[in-house]
Image 1 (tube, rainbow, N blue to C red):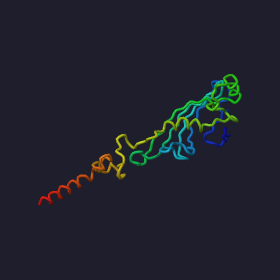
Image 2: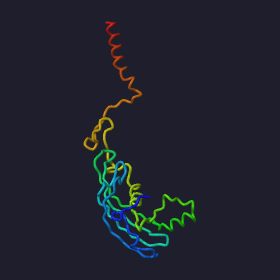
Image 3: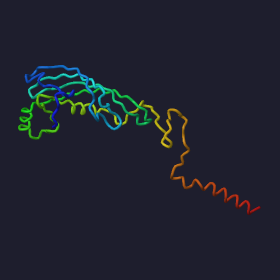
Length: 197
């Protein structure tokens, strides 16, 4: 696990609630989005504001963090490529365990998935992985500017919104080989007619 800096805006100080179960602490904070906070088509740009509304609660094993994250993701419509804004409103709840409790859990329950366990390191809680787990899967992989967006012409790339009657006379490739037969028939018919004359 990488050490988190106390100066990081995504670091919470576990000393705010301590180890006495039942103690709660509420935080409202605006942080800049970390790098690569999104998917290939939609993301919250690095440094853009994320509004956090958090509650830290001391429990026997560690600190239970419950909260919401709101932000604005930007990207492009997958149909027409116009820029779009997509509101992000993610809710999360995660338990961060004290290191000594984490060791105890691993001893008592050796099959527990250590990768999924979040620990408190140097009295600090790192929200970055929790935010990513809450926000990124919720972002659509095929965002559209509107549900009935007609998109672009697959033949020439023209915006169908600008020209609703736009179309191309496309011949099914299975019949394309027969396309020239009409002119051959016309030529053959003309030649026979000339012979008769």
